[in-house]
Length: 432
Image (tube, rainbow, N blue to C red; front, side, top):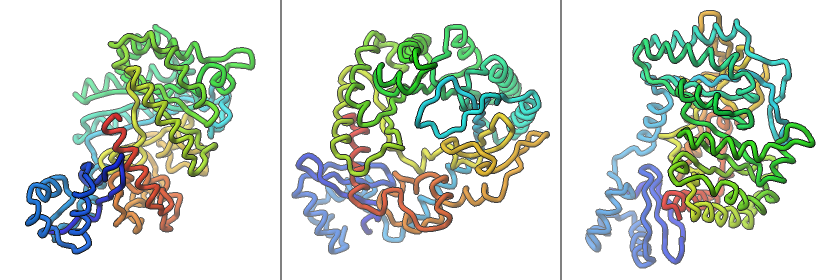
């Protein structure tokens, strides 16, 4: 027997937190037990620990902190990554009906193209793609995701025809079908929601930029007309109709100061309707300040206050080998309004960034860089022995792809940053 190379230890509230990232297991240890463990680690002698404290040894063994001496842990992780990312039982098509938007958020990375709209020709190619996907014997589920631009600008003219076609095809082939939308939420109304239900649109992600006044300076129709109250009302309407909704709160150091006021505006959502609402916090990446401990502590307190008010707050950490990014998956494609094919939605949809083109017969003519992407994160050597590899998952394939084969670490090779990630993961898992 030996100790797993994917163990990490860090102090937590006068105890020692032990974490095994392969099994995503935690143990909160008194320091006396940790000292006993550390002595066994220093001597590379887990069996000695068994002789001294058999119950403790068995708990460590069951949670993956101790493994068979011959076990190739990285090979096991690699197999999980490959099986997850190359799963052929589902196919996810992300569609941008337009690159136009009714808002002009200052930090948006996309180029808004006013005249952009998916044409009948491209819609027909999407139909062919759906035909191809649903005809494969291994396909058990089809997912349609809507992105943009603001996709709801063309709900009737682009989204409804494709949703009708996909719904018909999946029923015909006895395949599961769901859809979701990333939207600013401004255009939603009851008639639209009725169609969400009809076409199995089960989830919406909608963004706020802080409380009313700050939000309205970022997300507005024009200088005189904000969007906060309309969006809040539409979130309530979605929850009332039992449609899962993520309220993504993009924050800066400034917006954190008033974000707790959002609670008052959504406090009239009934407990039953709150079951359909998830609160998710994301820092605006253009304003990220490294090592801003004050902001981090402020955010923790804010999350706790939302939870104390009976709102579900999701975490930003997850098991990234079993629940990897959509862009890492072989059976995933982003179809832009003009037929260009991409993998990642977090970059500009430019000709230079595209990785393929949707053809007349519904196939994707993938470029060579697509195959490079799909293996990129498996080839990063520093990740192979990193204690939080399964939690981090080497970052996403986009990060690996952009590092062009050079060694990289999404946490700057800093063990203290990795410990903070594990601490945050523990807090989220325990709902502390």
